[in-house]
Image 1 (spheres, rainbow, N blue to C red):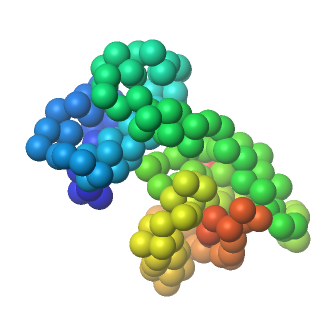
Image 2: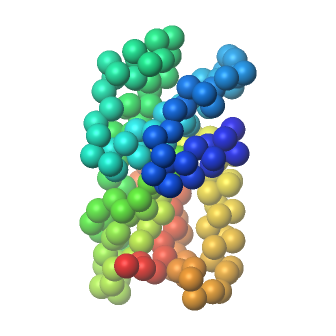
Image 3: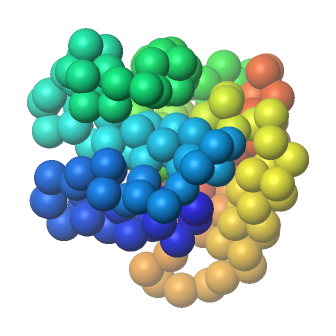
Length: 170
């Protein structure tokens, strides 16, 4: 599923109009629903970035036997504003992938702008996804390269979703 989602995300990022229906061929049952959920979240995100507002009706027409998955994804992809304990004030979402969102924030402790990658709440219930997210934070924090922003901090939002903050590159 991860490899298929990466391919789909790359297609969207390169400007293609991705048709998720073709990526669903050969998948059945719970695996199909999980893949559909991930691909649909990507599609909705990239279409919104391009100014489109995918409707429930349009999605149900394209995927008639998937109304419950569509409803769940539309609920999960609604605008989510992270609630930090004290240190960070969210300014704006600046990016989103299948698993997380990147927010520009103000670090109140040092009065500086930062970027914070936040795991989306619906993924925070999945221990495997949380472990992958935490590995990403650890690996990113260990890297030292001019093209990779240094990790400043990590923690959990009030709702339990993990995050890590890094230098904001504009």
